[in-house]
Image (cartoon, rainbow, N blue to C red; front, side, top):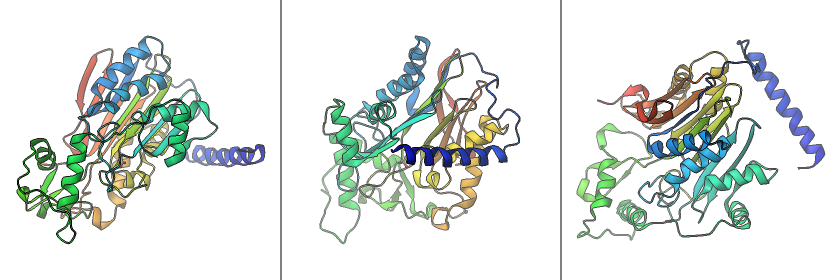
Length: 376
Ligand code: GLY
């Protein structure tokens, strides 16, 4: 960025900050004396239990919180059995794994992100490099891959046998008007379990994001996964960092980018206030910049739970009819994980029951999310 364009950017950023400040009603805005918990805390999505434990231990040992949360989610990026993140993540419609990730650092208010990154197992680590070793925030596609290789990240095929077989089953059962045909004798248990666990009766869903699947579970629809991991940590001094990493919507159009690598949507932290991050259907989050909105609500006095629930209500109110079920409720999952400077935390979900992960001085555990709607 040239000096002129950098100055122009700083001016625009300053105006935006003034607008946000002008709408604030809380005297604590910009006040570094907002009380800190004085205790380490790490929160994550349900799949991030070990991530919170790892990040907590690293913060306790003196690591920067950004290094700690990225190392935490690295455990799940490595896990071939988590089909929503990193190695073993479900691929795009062409069978190629494309990963999105971002990191945000409270003390410097810097951020780094990568999107549509292929062949690199740890996109959150690459996002951290973007934050620390470039003057940019977001690198995508071939440029992100070149950057990762320049920093010594090895290229590898991220498609495991399980994710390949799930993708192939999806492709072969998508339509009876193409030339792909499933093997009628195929009885791969893990693949069948995958579809069964995500299937809903046709009558319960109106969302066009669902597709028909194999005849063995017909007449059912398959809810495409948008699983992800988010992890946020706070040090004893009240310094925050957060990260979100994902393989995104399963079988997406190549090049589709969700909320995870977008600062303000898939994650956001303000070192004076707290952090928020998300998992679930990225498009609705992108349309509402939910993580930024939730942190701003906390700035104005809302608790983490109140802030997260208000954002969920806003999303539920604004979504299009095609994303509603027969009762008019949102027909998708969306979860936020929130952590405030004073040590309060919450997980909130569009549909319960759901869990989220926490590690603090009371140990490592799953807690219940507060739900806007609950399935019977
Ligand atoms: N929240 C993950 C995605 O939609 O890509």
